[in-house]
Image 1 (spheres, rainbow, N blue to C red):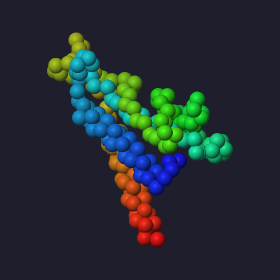
Image 2 (cartoon, rainbow, N blue to C red; image 1 turned 60 degrees about the horizontal axis):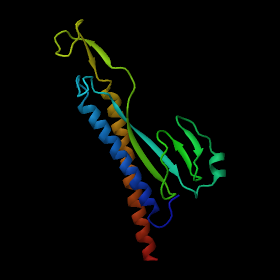
Image 3 (cartoon, helix red, strand yellow; image 1 turned 90 degrees about the vertical axis):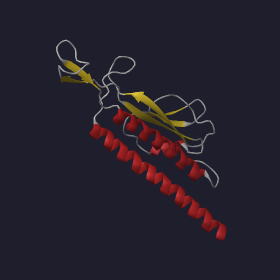
Image 4 (spheres, helix red, strand yellow; image 1 turned 45 degrees about the vertical axis):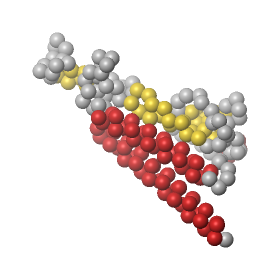
Amino acid sequence: MSSGLFGAIKTSASGLRGQRTKMDVVARNLANADTTRTAEGTPYKRQRAIFEQVLGDKVGQHQMKMSRHSGPGELRTTRSGHLNFRLSSDSESPDGGISSDVGVAENASEFRVVHDPGHPDADADGYVLLPNVNPITEMVDMISASRAYEANISAVQTAKEMFNQALKI
């Protein structure tokens, strides 16, 4: 865990940056939901935010062994002794504290195919490849990111209030 008075704020700031990135990705996906031709000549490919969380040296190995992990990714110890829950790349926490890295990756799902012979990007048979963006999924992701962002702001406010109360002692 992060140490010092500002550890909670640093942790929440990391979460705020990550959720802001996720909201930016969702907004980009929604803005390009109907883009049938990009600079590469293909329809827009949905992007998604990939979170990576790195736990510092201060978290004991025994605590992690006691907890069970379910879901995608893996829990492992790095060369520097950090316990990492990996969803994407192999970056390490530079200061041994809690950090959160967010990467952006393209979604590998197939493009939607629609029969629209009048569309300028239709093939010889009248089929058009549309982006693999589902607005409903994007809105759910946006609401989720927004709620997580609000929770991090609330955590910062609570930490500030605790600091103020500690100063009154």
